[in-house]
Amino acid sequence: MDQCGHRCAGLGLAGRCALVSDTNVAPLYADEVGASLEAAGCEVVRVEVPAGEASKSMAVAEEVCRQMIRGGCDRSSFVVALGGGVVGDLAGFVAGIFYRGVPFVQLPTTVVSQVDSSVGGKTGVNAPEGKNLIGAFQQPRLVLADTRTLASLPEREFNEGFAEVIKHAAIRDAAMLDAIMAVGGAGDASLPGLVARNVAIKARVVEADERETSGERAHLNYGHTVGHAIEAAGGYGRFLHGEAISLGLVAAGTISEQTAGLPAADADRVVEALEKFGLPTRLPPDLETARLLELMRRDKKFEAGRIRFVTVPELGRAELRDDIGEEQIAAAIEALR
Ligand SMILES: NC(=O)c1ccc[n+]([C@@H]2O[C@H](COP(=O)([O-])OP(=O)(O)OC[C@H]3O[C@@H](n4cnc5c(N)ncnc54)[C@H](O)[C@@H]3O)[C@@H](O)[C@H]2O)c1
Image 1 (cartoon, rainbow, N blue to C red):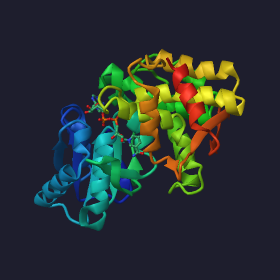
Image 2: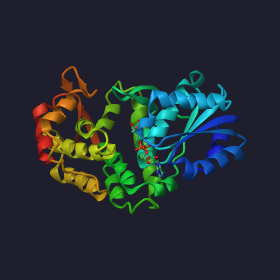
Image 3: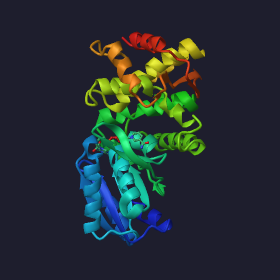
């Protein structure tokens, strides 16, 4: 965080900038980041949005733009997003539309945003009709992940982020499972290296298929077909995203075992890693399979009546399939009980 100013200056980002953060993160870190930007000669316009997913809306995006205008920002300004995925997605989207586009920098402060959402250029807001339906591809000029910030995360949020880390191991880097099992907690000395390893995985996938056309970026959806349905069935409040994805990873592991030859012991290693972070691996009984299948059919991964499903034939390698039937998915959901 204290390097933000000079690193921005090194990229030619100078002058006025909007430091966008939320009501949880700003009191903790905005002073340090603001001071660093000011020391590098920037004029900082601070914008604070309410913490929480509800801030990913067109109304809040407009309000951020208007605060920037009133603060004197113009087309020569840039945006610094300080916070989790909500702030990153929102502020990145604002940077994409403010004066038809200004540069932006991400300072992700959650596990999810450090290993996942800050990399790849997907930005946007939610519509009342659905999540992430309004947005733009907008690559940040710089991403600075300072793992010191993870120490102030509530434990549930810290743990949640590991669902995506474990997913990365399953689809691209089997050996990373050992590193994941060795993580001691938010202050662990291995975290900077582990975050970097995950950024490299996500960046390689995105570089190969930025706009999700070749199917490679779809590998990142491993565990998400069932996971998204569980998240929706819980009304987006009962499970954190990573908790729903945890259940989705277990189901995808079962399907990989049954249809792609994943050894049972390897599917178990993924389950053990999820359990280490207190992530759920058993489905609560009230979530009915029929309801989950119905929600799954509405998902964008369901194309022309066929589900595009990612399986892992061996840990560290993924493949996109269109031959996984609903019965197989239903059976894997039942096996979660
Ligand atoms: N763009 C992408 O590719 C992508 C990928 C994955 C997720 N996302 C999006 O990211 C969002 C979820 O991100 P998230 O999990 O980071 O949620 P979040 O931004 O809501 O942060 C979680 C909570 O932790 C608080 N917080 C953040 N950093 C903190 C810190 N260091 N100390 C104390 N509290 C802190 C936040 O205020 C919030 O209350 C979703 O909207 C999701 O759609 C986007």
